[in-house]
Image (tube, rainbow, N blue to C red):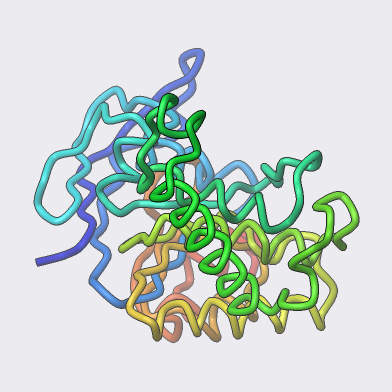
Length: 253
């Protein structure tokens, strides 16, 4: 059974079909990429599947369960986590605290217990800090554990956001343009990190404009154009598809 199934998903904003009858399946343990020219509907599709937007029609199933209409935190409890195209980092917190935020759905959130600082709460916080530090090391930020978030480079913040998403212990991780704005060295680091995440058993769904990264990483690629599915297949199949070439380079290509 596919981990994620999207069937005939559609959404319009102001009369414009941003996503139009899009269907696809994501298999467990794979890296699935969504590409397309600017304005193709990639981020809108992400927002529909992850509960930010509500679809006008169609169905989203996670492990066979229909999840249309669920809020993002409800989807997170089911194992779906994500990052954003524009960084959503709390700059007034430390890097470590940002990662700890990602684990909040797994915690006992009783205000009374927190105020009393019961031994179990103290032990939980200590364990959470240890886990967050391990995740920072996992994404290559071991030397930034004590840093303030606003002191980190842009590339480090991109990896920090991935660490925070992983703190939720997802089965399915959505990454919205993780390499956007990065230099070649930073892009290579993100490439290696995504591969490492997938090899750990977390399924990755990726929106990205860096075609070298996409073609290197992806097990399967979905191509959107004007909100509709233009093509789908392996990297080799998509690379030589004439419709994809025309959409990116112009019909004359």
